[in-house]
Length: 354
Ligand code: FNR
Image: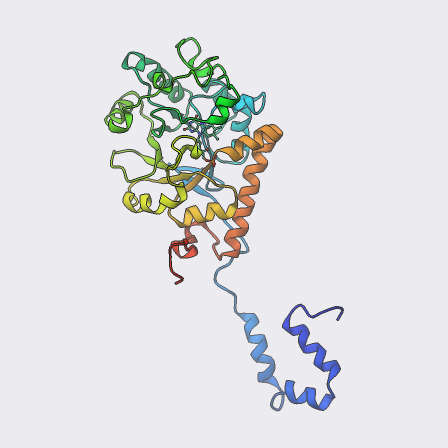
């Protein structure tokens, strides 16, 4: 044996060489044929450990659609700033990873371009428009998404106005043309200075108090409707919710999403799926969110960073890396499937040790 022992069996070899034979035999020996002595050790080899983590299954379903892992791509605006192929590249990467991308209403590729870029299940995100006079635009976009085969509408409700991002103001950021509105409206944030852009002209500040708008949305589409941007219990008859604070881009001092997830899951009582986003950076983060009750997580910035760094390949690698990390985390936590991940696998900092 070379070097220091790396397991206890190797320790057994050291006294065999170091001790006089009489002493070594005294310690290591057993009775007569030493049958039971050998059996004591060998009998262990006939027993397998029941939690077999030699194969980990990360696959799950969201709204009935199978995905390879509980990691979806969150809606985020303006992917052409990250890469010339924009949302088309992101959509192809998500499809290559057998997962689902949620296309932002404020995308820089159109609903149709993304739909025809690859054959995959896709969801669509939208906001509530402000003036009822413009509501036809909103209907037009939702119905275009439905016609193009998007399978669900994610209605973002945490943006009655745009959060004030001081970095954007300092950078004198100018919004690009938002492709989905071309030919529909001239007052969108096309070419406008971000500071001058008044979100009240685009979003509906009263929406949070008017959940009846969901009834209207349901009247113009047959697709399932999910609410994105929920941080507290809601009772509004939707097909699912996303616990989200918009990646901390709206209300500063809103609670970190992971700190409210369990409370929302408790209030929902399993009636509809609860998805989660905000701050996912590691496979361990995914496991923590699932242990606290999320059915799957969405990644926002990570996908955009992958896209900016290496285009479609970069988004694919980001998803694969997170998936690999989750797989390893599950194996090390004794979870061969997602169903094995339970509340017992995590302890929050306010909990006492069990
Ligand atoms: C977003 N997000 C977002 N959400 C939405 O509903 N519609 C949108 O158009 C956008 N746009 C957008 C742009 C950028 C640059 C970012 C980073 C995020 C929020 C997004 O869907 C998600 O909630 C957060 O990004 C999740 O947090 P992480 O993963 O970025 O920490």
